[in-house]
Figure (cartoon, rainbow, N blue to C red):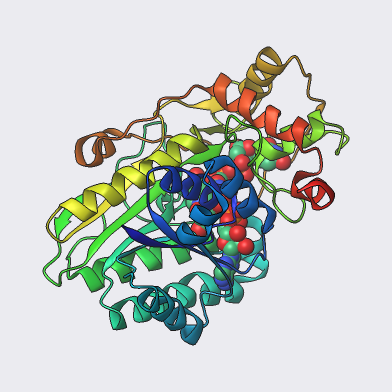
Length: 366
Ligand code: NAD
Ligand code: UFG
């Protein structure tokens, strides 16, 4: 059985990807320190998989802990061995991800994102595990352009969070023995198999409404904020700027369904497993841009809910437009997004209305 360690597994993208891999027959070691998530999401994954209790015990091991803890990581590899299994690959989601916060806590971002990844890579190498799919981000590109972004565009982050993602990409291309950190596919002379997936704006939820996005504090991202205003948890939305050089003055982003992103991870992992040692750097986005005002309108058409908003100043570290050119992902891992913005709104709203307070609601009933 293929055995995968997933860091940050209880989080938004980690939980959806874990469910997909569980249903595809993988054995999973799910590691999280729950600093921005709830363990309830892992219970929900087990429930949604429809495996028997015994099968769940065989197929899922949950590890509460930190990616900066080398001995914990080494113990995880040893535990797999003691069960007659070998962790042959890692999907690495764990990290800090709030752009604004990264200006105030730059050192924490470098320690967790870069230091944590370094520790993880050491544990992997020591245990002869050289396959990793890494959560990179469109933030590595920095300043916006009117054109869609391709992987060969300059890496030039404009916030500390993006700088940590760019540094990790460099670290990974270095250990792969590759020259370039902007080439979509390169051979790895050192024998690693690596995929850096640059997600654009993941949003939505699993269609069941059982798992979704539930950040511990006030959300930073637009989509969960729209949902929380919709459900009455917040009074109104502040739109950060109406003077951007875009069709209606509000920021344009490439929103991509979280289940499409989860499928992108499976596609990348499956490709790495089959291929010679390579390093992939790929955008995961739809190639379609949507402004803040357009998203509010599509949300209303899809859910019937009107979102109250007001305009505020621009947010530090934001750009006008961020749009993917996703053609290299189609070429190298045969992935493209399948779901629409209406699907994102419908599924996200289903999650929000089924769990108005996120997983906190679940403590009594799960
Ligand atoms: P998330 O916060 O929901 O998930 C991250 C998970 O990592 C959380 O469960 C958190 O508890 C855990 N974690 C954090 N620090 C940890 C540590 N030191 N040790 C162990 N676990 C730790 O975020 P997400 O939206 O699911 O994002 C997953 C990854 O994708 C992140 O690396 C993020 O930077 C990246 N990414 C996210 C987006 C987005 O818009 N959601 C876009 C691009 C890239
Ligand atoms: N926005 C508002 N009001 C809010 C929040 C956001 O107007 O309260 C606007 C932003 O200005 C931007 C758009 O909504 O125009 C999207 O903002 P998000 O915060 O949802 O997303 P970002 O594009 O800023 O960043 C996200 C993730 C990053 C990731 C990046 C990749 O937060 O982790 O996408 O493009 F790296």
